[in-house]
Structure formats: structure tokens, C-alpha cells
Length: 475
Ligand code: ZN
Ligand code: MN
Image 1: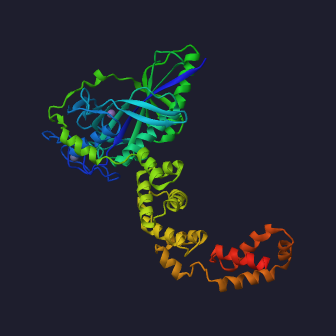
Image 2 (image 1 turned 90 degrees about the vertical axis):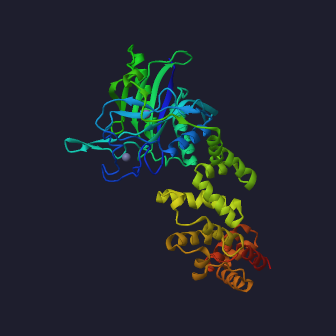
């Protein structure tokens, strides 16, 4: 029998605000344990929270980007549970009236578009961290308490591991384009829980679902859902029943295991937080935030095709990351040659970034300098081959292209006399091949070009070399 998997994702996205959601403490990652704290996030008696305006703005921006309805009034609620890394004994979250609801995330699958509907996007704070891997004790670091999160809840619209992965990648791309999160999964800036069930293909009713937690990479999301899908099918095929529960993904063992029975909303005894006033979003704020939205990847790629005449595939690669698209556009501004700029960014630049594992924003060759280099090729000062050498030297030395070309004497030689001398030398040194050419084996022409370029250390203008060679060989 044939089954299909049904998946809904809950994504926690950590915002990149400077200060926490309800106090002025820094959100900086990697600080010594328990140093980014104050009476509010430590839950000392009498301390009162004040909502960070940026958190609301970021939530609205994500809501606008995904076509959500933005609530003109929403409330912050207390989600009560007891855990050592939660000093207050409750998490400030949103329950009955979230800031954003509805909306969709459009995913490009191999079969075309797929719209994954959103239930809601709400604001909440993060909890601290329990550290279990130092000796036999458990340590608590509350630096993360109060760091702002957006929780993005999808409907169970996802039907395959691939779709789940594409959806997550799309959201990652959107928050990065909006500039509201660094989207770094390894540092926990994007955390994903998955609700997974299976049913017979064509069935209307959903199967019993389990929730998987603790997936901290794109790969682990795929692996965990795949594992869970197989586990469900296996149980059903053997006449068993699925238990609704929360399961943990164990990346070392590559399996999920039971963590606790499923909790229900009433277990948390949600109620409006009496310390915080309702969030109000008026039209003026909405209009202002709409103006701050960036041009999104699809629209930008389309514009690149129209404006720069580059292929749709190239435009897709160049707009996958906002910073890469910005870099590319800056190179085009600097050199005026979009096709060459696109080849360089898609080729050499992306390759180097991958090799060095750095983001384009910290790449040592600025777009202006790459533009200069591209300009030197277009102007005939250097060939493409030499340009690649110059590019390497730019990375090593930090010098500009022009400086390197001058210092190292790499400028292309178009001087006919000098090229003629080299051509003459090559012809004299290879009488055999000359004979072949003259008897009709014109294929050896390439050999002569290669020899001439070698003789001139790659600096000869290839057009001039071709011309002179032809004259000499045929004359
Ligand atoms: Zn604080
Ligand atoms: Mn949550």
C-alpha cells in the first residue's frame, strides 16, 4: 500500500536585535555564561518588562512579506511551565491574538509552485540553556533568556521531505532578505520542529502525528522527517498504532526517540500578561514598514533578466542571497558590463567564498575592485586568463587590479612588432608542424597559438596573434 507523509513545521526564528525583547540586555551570542542579564530577564521580584519596538516591526515585516493579516491589536500572553532554564516560570509569548495570521510561503518545487499556508506568526521570548555535557552536573546559562523570537507555524500542507526542506530554505531566504535574522542554524537562529504523520494516499483524514524537536541543520530536518515517516509506516504495516508524543532527533544515532507525551495548550494555562499593554499597529506604521521592505528574490531575478539581459538561471543564482545580489549589482555599476560581472561573481567569487567559507560581506575583494578588473579585460589591457591570475593576486596582496598589472608587468601586448618576433620564433622552431599546416592540416593552428601565447607568457593579445600567425603561415 502506498502512503504519503503530512508535515507541518513550527519554526523559531531568532531576531537580530541588539537588545532583548523585554529589557536592555545585549543579545550577543557566545558571551561568558550569565553575563547578558538584568533583573528583568533574571525574573527578580518587582522587575517589569518593556517591549522592544524593533521586535514588533520585524514581526510585521515578516507578516507583510508572507501575505499575512496584521492584527491592529494583539496581546502578549504568559505560557506557564517550569523548567530550570526559565527563571520566571513562564515564557512571554502570544496565544489567542498573535500579531500575524494567515499568509503563505511559496515554494518552487520540481513540479512547479506550491503554496504552504501559515497559521500564524507570533512574538515570543527565548528561554535559557541547560548544559549537560560538563561532568555529571547540569549548568544553566540564562544569557538567552528574553532574546526575541518569531514563531512561524505552518498548516500541515507539506507532502514530502523535499518540500519541507524547500520551505525551510525559502523562509531562511526571506528572513535574510528582510535583514531581521542572521538565519544561522548552527547557532540556533533558526530552529525547526516538525509535526509528522502519514496516511494512505487519497485518504482524507490525517493520521496521528508526532512532533520532532532538536533539528539544527537543513540536513537533519530532512533526515528526521524521513526517519519518522518510515517509523510510522512500519508501525501501521505491523498493525500497531501511533502514539501522539514529542520526540527528539538524535543526530549521532540518526534516529528519533520518545521525549515526553504530547502536551496540550491547556497544560500551559495561557493568560494575558498583566505587565504588558496590548500591541497596537496603526496604518501609519504599516505604511512605513511596507516602504522598508526589500525587493524580494523572485522580483529581483526578473529585473536582472530584463535590465541586464542575463539568463534566468544566472539571475536565480545571483539573487539567492541578498548580499550576493547587492555585490553583483555593485560590480555592474563599477564596470558597466553585466554579463562579465555575472560570470565573475557566479564563477570566481562564489567559488572563493565557498572555499573560504566566508559571507560575501566579508570578502576581501570589494565589488568596486572587481569592477576595475572586469574593466581592464573589456578595455583590452589584460586577457581573461591573465585576469584570473590578477584576481588571485588581489586576494593575496589586497592590492587593486591596476596596481598589480603595472607592478607585475601583466598588461596585454598588442604591439605588432613584438608579437611578430614571437610568431617568427615559433614558426622557425617547429618546421614539422609548419609543413603539416601548409599541406592542409589546419588543425595544428591551435598548437601555434598556444606556443605563441606561451612564448609571450600569456600576455599577447590573442586577436593580434591569430592575425599575424595566419599571415605568416599562409604567406
Ligand atoms: Zn535583561
Ligand atoms: Mn515557541
